[in-house]
Amino acid sequence: MSAGTITVTRVTELSLTDLAAGTVVKPGDAEWDAARSFHSGVGEPTIIVRPSSVDDVRAAVRYAASERLDVMVRGGGHSAWGAVPGGVTLDLDALDDIRVDGALVHVGGGATWGAVAAALAEHGLAVSSGDTASVGVGGLTLGGGIGWMVRAWGLAADQLVGAQVVTASGDVLEANDASHSDLLWALRGGGGNFGVVTRFDFRAHPLTSVVFATLGVAGDARPVLRALRDTMIGAPRELTVTYMDVPAMDPSAPAGATITACWIGDDEDAARAALAPLVALDGVTETELGVRGYPDILMDMPAADPDQAMPGFVGGNTLLEVLTDDAIDRLAAFREANSASVLFLRSLGGAFGDVAQDATPFPARSATWFAMAGAFDIPGLVDDGNRPLIQAEWDAIEALGEALYGNFTTSTDPGLVSRIYSPEAIARLAEIKLRLDPQNLFCRNHNVTPA
Ligand SMILES: Cc1cc2nc3c(=O)[nH]c(=O)nc-3n(C[C@H](O)[C@H](O)[C@H](O)COP(=O)(O)OP(=O)(O)OC[C@H]3O[C@@H](n4cnc5c(N)ncnc54)[C@H](O)[C@@H]3O)c2cc1C
Image (cartoon, rainbow, N blue to C red; front, side):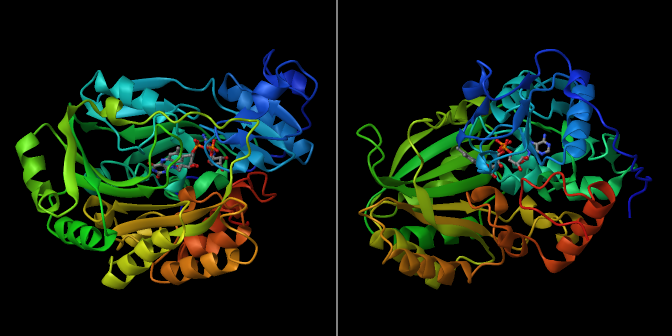
C-alpha cells in the first residue's frame, strides 16, 4: 500500500479562463490544424490545452472533469491514442525542462528522449530510453521503455525513482519510495492511467560513449536468428542487439535485414569480440562499428504526413521467455509470406530480468527476447480474404510468448489490457486507479478500469 494518503478533493467548476493566456486552442482557431497534428497523425479533439505550468495542468484537468471530457495527455505524440476523437488534448510540449542534480535527472512531462540524452551527455550521464530521439519521455516510460541499455540498466521505467503527478481531482502528488509509493509502482509500466506526470525523476548512469555496430544480413534469416539467440545467451550485459527486416520503404531505403548492436562503453575490441560469432556467419557483414556518443545513435523519425494515412498493421508483438527454433521458423516464415511486412526482434534478459515480477506492473520479466511482426495493410497486398489468415499466423506466434508490450502496438482495443498485464498487476492497478481516478478521466491509454 502507498505510504502516503491520497486525498481526493471535489472537482470544482472552473472555466478555461483559469488557464494562462494562449494555452487554449479551439476548432476554428488559426493554430487548430497545427495544434491537433501529433507525431503519428492528426487528432480530432474537442479542445486542445497547451499548459505552460503545473497550475495550468491542474486547471485543465479540473475543466475536463467538470465538462465530463476525457483527457488525452500528449507527451511526444508517438502513440495512436492521439487519434481517438473528442476530449481534451493536453499537450505537454512546453513542460520540457531537464534539470540534472548529481545522478538524478528531473525531466518535464513533455520532454523528448533526444533532448534528455543531449542534456545528460554534457554531464557524462545517460538514462536508457528507446531508439528514437523524438519519442516522448512520458509515453515510453509509463509503458516500460525498451532501449539500447535494457540489458545493462533495465527499462526506462526501472530508472524512474520519483514523479510529480496531477491527479484527476487536480491535486499534485509527489510519488517516490517514501510517499505515494503505490503510485510510483503504477507509473513504472502501468501507462498514463493515473494522472498527468508533470515531472519524471530518473536515476542516471555514468556513460561517456557507446560502441555502435550495424551488420548487414543476407539470405535465410533462420540460421542467423539462431546464432543471434545463442550469442546473446552468454553475452555480457553491456551488449544489447536488435534484428530488423524491412521491405523497401522508398528508393533511399531498400529492403533488407540488419543486426544493430550497442555496447555500453568505448571498448571496441570487446564489442567486436562479442559480435564475432555473428560476423563469421555466411551472409553477415560488418557495415559499421565505432565509438559514438549516446545522443548520436538515437534516430530521427520524421513526423507522419497529415495528408497521407498510415496503413494499418496485421500482426502484433510478444515477449518471449525463450526464442525457440519453432518461434524463429514461424517469424521467418511470416516475413517471407508477406512481402510488405516487418520483422523486429530485441534482446532482453540481463538487468531487465533482475527486477522482481511484482516490483513493477511490467509483464514477463523472464523474457529474453521481444519480437514484433506485421504486414502493412495495403490494398492489393493484404485483402479481406487473407487478413484473417495473416492474423492467425501471428496469433500462433504470440501464443508462444508471455505477454504483449503495450507501447509497441498501434491498437487501442481495450481487450489488450489483459494480454499486457498479469491478473495480479491488473487488480493492483485497478485499485490504485479507483483511488486516484474513479471517473476514469485518463482513459486514453491501455486503460485499466477503476475497480
Ligand atoms: C518511431 C517510434 C520509435 C519507437 N521506439 C521505441 C523504443 O525504442 N522503445 C520503446 O519501448 N518504445 C518505442 N516506441 C513506442 C513508444 O514507447 C510509444 O509509442 C509511446 O507511447 C510514445 O510515447 P509518447 O509520449 O511519444 O506518445 P504520446 O502519444 O504522447 O503518449 C502515449 C501515451 O502515454 C500517455 N502520456 C504521455 N506522456 C504522459 C505524461 N507526461 N503523463 C501522463 N500520461 C502521459 C498518453 O496519454 C498516451 O496514453 C516507438 C514508437 C515510435 C512511433
